[in-house]
Length: 538
Image (cartoon, rainbow, N blue to C red; front, side):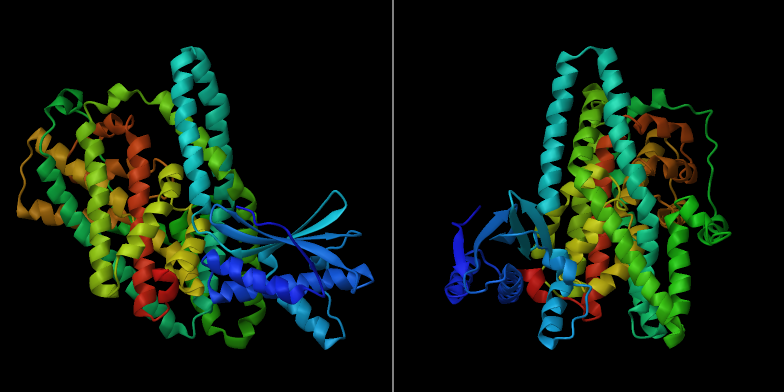
């Protein structure tokens, strides 16, 4: 949407303000957004007027644009090239200029400059859309499905193999590698900044304890329901002939192994191996020490803040490629996954959807009981956001968008989100844990192995322990399956039976993981009084 272009000068500037008030109100912007938009426009307009050399004769054009829910102002000014953002690092002697540049500096992320056809163009973002990336991702998803189905219908098998190996797979792996390159530093700096922004060590311990306790309680409820779902789904006789009874050696990770694997052998290893569980431990450990250091740690805190912003800037440069990657990923899946594979495993695919419904309904109950808020805004907003985790199938890849979503759509305090969301990724693998648990019980029923109270209790705590080791990367759940199957007494070779349907159910699992993480951060913000209800209910 574009409004008519408004020609403005110093003489009629007050009329422009009245027009903007009316236009922004019709678009449903808040008073704060309207005020910020008018303030930034005024500062940029008078910067251009001063630079023109004749403020009385200076004229510019203003228009309001709305694109995928994002509302922006465009200031179009003729004359020589001049970018007001180039001056924001200067420290002028004049107090009024200091104030003016301070305003521009505080909102520099919402201002962009371009020059086209000898005209200066300043774009000012007035309203940020939390659904923008989801909309682009949805478009990429649809395009990918259409391209994949179309290519599979008309192209020869050898050409399809070439497309998958050289185009779609390459695009997907390049993007994942580029993003994973910066995710570990982003998590590291974000968690440390979140910890050091708290008032004292007691706050860190209290909030961290609440977050982990909330996650464990929710995970326990979901595990019990998943065990029940496995019994309800019953046996799948078609799988018996596919199982290799002789292959029943599981690599079972003990509690000791899990505890030891959390602590890195050196400070470089977590980043070198992209082991986010170790990165989290390192960030929490160093963040706690830095928080206790007082004024001595101020130089290091500045480095941490810069590091987080630098990592976020790197992520923002990569993220625009997301829709293209989603399209490539979906096209690849449509080509390599034969629909006939789904028929014997339709019960498994359906169970993944049932698990998602169970999880989102459970989270709604937790929000209503513990958070004492209506869960409807949470569910409604999450469903529009869920396109992203479903498409990329990785909570870590979604981290930058998740942090913005928490602040701008759910109303969670930004500093709290920096602390809770990265940590919560590892403690809220609800979807992956529910999926593997239900399948393990289903297979045990299929094989005909006995169930008793001791087995159920042992299996419950083993599955709970293993849920904290789930890697947050696409397809990683099948890695953990071997351990869970071994604990259930199921042949570990059965893991290979589920490779064919994993690309589809992996997206559902990631969405379930994401809703668990978001609800934990939301509940923590609610309990700590760091939730903006106006944003949540708008």
